[in-house]
View (cartoon, one colour):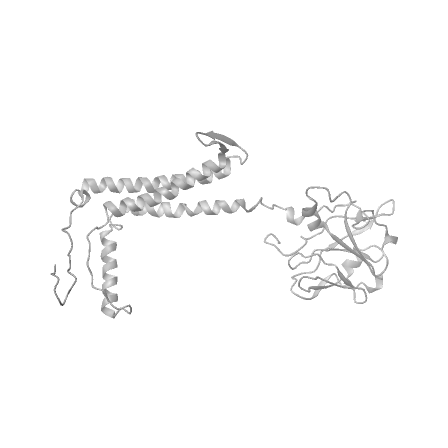
Length: 331
């Protein structure tokens, strides 16, 4: 402790004498604190498991009465209580550990330049090692192991929340409304198409029979089933499978670009190329709709077509590969 004078106008008050805690002098008290911290970490682990179980098992439409709030979602209540408990117990355990078991000796140190010299860095490393030793994390394995368990489990709560991004797609991205016997309906006239309705060099857009704009799932279904109908001279079709899957030169390809899913609508009659207006991916409809320019990753899927007993164009099955851009389920 120093006294203020003309040279040093500010007196150094010094540090008060250190007072030992009960845990510093009584190992039984330290053990009690250790068990309390471990209990908090264990409760955190159980709460995290409860969060996951609640997320999986509690129906999202179930409600419960909680006084004085009233009727609330049972799922939201369960998730909030379990996640809150898990996070609170980790924080409370860490605070109790620091206040009762970690060293609380105050250490005074001189200020130093921002660029630490080598001896200061060595001292920092030594202080860190000393602090780690005084924290007893190596000696008190019960605290260490339960803390690691709590910190390992609690992030699983965030992983489970990713489930709310939407329902799992299953195989829905691999299938459309097209099926054997499903008629091709003109998108503009809403009438079934006959071969004579499609002129050579024309571009027609079609949808599956039975799909109406008033339906709730229309946008989802048309995003997969939108069809592009073009009539070519059979001699101009270069790809054998394309010719086999056509009817009198009428070919049907998905209208959905295989880059990012934009609808294709620009047709070059002389070259038989179609162009996506979004990023200029270009497909050759006379050669299996393969990509000849742009960022699209693969050709447009073709729909096999024929005519039914009444002379209307019909699908002979669904697309044999997913339509639109590549996705994580593409095999």
